[in-house]
Length: 386
Image (cartoon, rainbow, N blue to C red):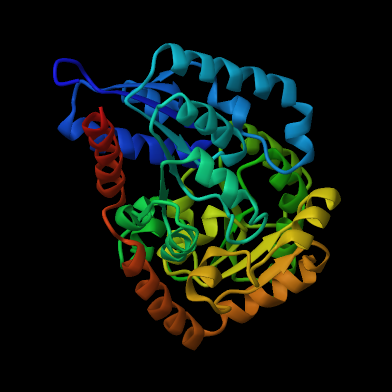
């Protein structure tokens, strides 16, 4: 290995994984500039030289029903990747998130003697806890973004490193609302609410109109309000544009991307549960977390949940810092009342800033470098074993 570049297999399934993958690649390249990366990656990973053998978008499916429709294609893709990596063994394989897809690859590759790392813990601590047995069989080393996840793996004797969340490294401890508003041409002193209904087609279909209806009710109560809505990608932009065709009474700024800037500029954020809640927390914003899923997906998941919360701020604090309004409870009336309460409560905003800053410091750990060090340590172990 001393005479050849490192070969690293890496597979991600969506934009957040592409971001993590790019951070990991960059950190690995700082000590191994000639390392070869291949597997499945998005535009950020490909820009750093990662060869994507299949389009990442194929993996960007959620829930229970939607992946079933794509199952033959996903299984073909997984077989193709396993075949490729067994024929051309990497020094290590890193599966980033996408657990239903990646754990199957990791299981096969580990059996073939290829070291496997899984980066981003599946929510095994929250639901489907029986998956820990498969994880233990498939994964040589787990990298977790959050501290309580590492505790779970220690308890089940799975080798684990808590690396922290790279977003906590990227986002400042003290956000700059004035600068964000200036960049987005938003009023410097009026109240602003950011609306983030999700990055997937199904999320925007279920939450987009609901969030706009809640915004309209808020405006009725406070005519000074301005709204900002970042579209995650061109497809979501089209979807949201269609919803706004008949909406000419809302003072709303629609953005292409720029979700961090939109949240930084806002007084309060209404968002779909997921990584966005963590981002809003790191930006120290009062928020209302909402989610709707297809009735079948929700029925299955709600019966399996083993934790009292779904949003990361509450899970990290182990108490309710932010309201969670889910499924049938998610009405425009309820969301608007909660948003207006948070908009008018400066004492709560100060308290949340303090709580969120404390959590931010806990997960700010130089994540990309820690993840890279753990991956290189796996390779060194393998070399010594042979």
